[in-house]
Amino acid sequence: METEKNRHIDLQVISKAHFDNLTTGEKIETFVQAYRVPKNRSKAEALHILQSKIEHQQVEKPVRNLRVYWSAVASIALVALLTTVYFFHSKSVQIVAGMGQHVEYTLPDGSDVAVNAGSKISFSESEFAKNRILKLEGEAFFSVQKGNPFVVETKQGKVEVLGTTFNVYSRNNELNVACLTGKVKVTVNGQNVIIEEGEKAELISGTLKKTTNILTEKMAGWRSGEFHFENMPLISIFEEIERQFNVRITTTGLENRYFTGDFSNKNLTETLETVCLPMKLDYEITNGNQIGIKPKKE
Amino acid sequence: MRIESDKNQAETGLEQVGFEQLFDAYYDELQHFIFFKSGDTEVAEDIIQDAFLKLWEIRTTVRVDTARALLYTIAANLFSNRYKRMKLNLKLQLTIVEDRTFETPEFEMEIKEFDQKLQRVLSGLNENNRTVFLMNRIDQMTYNEIAAALKISVKAVEKRMKKALEHIRKEIEQKF
Image 1 (cartoon, rainbow over the protein chains, first blue to last red):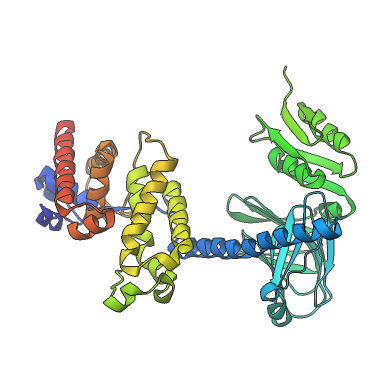
Image 2 (cartoon, helix red, strand yellow; image 1 turned 90 degrees about the vertical axis):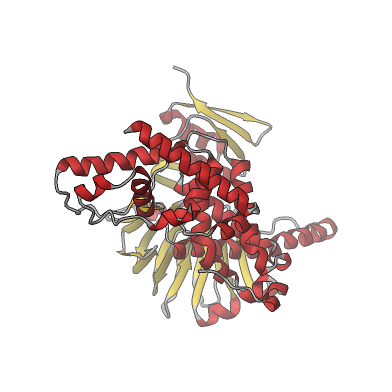
């Protein structure tokens, strides 16, 4: 049976007369040998993704231990709101903004970073002194001191600058970088985009796109509690509300709907009204922090 | 392609040989393996990511010489746990370049029709028979290698191959 697999002919050059002369078995072999398995990503990309998952796991573990540690401390000393976590184990620093919190932090090189709710920045102190590289999960605003290249690595790609102010939004599969001053270079899977003041780079279904004349101040407005969204998936909007107000939101029937507008993080019901009214949605708050969202009945 | 494991290596944990080397050697064939089962590139790629992640978690207890078969077992389990058997629609790529010139449009049509029919027949094959058949024909794995990877006997591989071939031939002949 195994010998049969040698009797195949190159489909690339086969003539009609030759093809007609093949037995069914030979035709089958000829085709099967010419088949390739389709791929979405290369092996190198797959390895890269796997490595970042592995790295992510290793970062996560010490954090969990730390939480256990702090809960012990808290029970004795009643240490309440702790927003910034300095993490000295293996000299790595994590700046974590929990739900409903914003954290401002000055990096060792004097650059300032504001971390939005439900976001995390991590870097190695010794490494950062040599190369200004840090990792971001979520959203943060950077005001970078002039000097060596400053690199923000996200799940989707990296953002590179010299000295500038810019905002990075990296959640789910979305990456959105807005430049307020200076120049920013964004790299995703080998695609490059350089953006300047008033421009943004956005990852749209795998492709990096540049948009000019954007309201950059609004995109970084979250620092003062003002949120601005342009054509964002409704689901992402409610995820943002979850993070800002530390609530749990369950939604139904919001797929493929988009929202453009503003809200502030001062008042939950006001914010819900702002989004739900124009989008014709109903909301229901139970137990103070559970919210259900569904389309209004006609 | 293959990682040869001598006796010394077989005794050591995975880290020494290099997890990356293992990934490099077996990623493609494993991704194909789940594709042959599912017919879905994305499902195959996701499952193989998770399979390697699992292997990484237990790397200290895994021996190099068993890693390949273990990866197959993990991948097959992840697939059967997560996905219900659905009617699949295999879409293999036929590697004849688009600009090949055919003698007549009728001949081009004939080639394309045969391709579609064959893929439909392959899709309708029993999952195990199809997987073994394509592992052998597309990835050029020997019966011994397939038997070791799937932890079945060489006899069982032969049986699945025979069934696959008989079924494909019968269906194709009926349809022409």
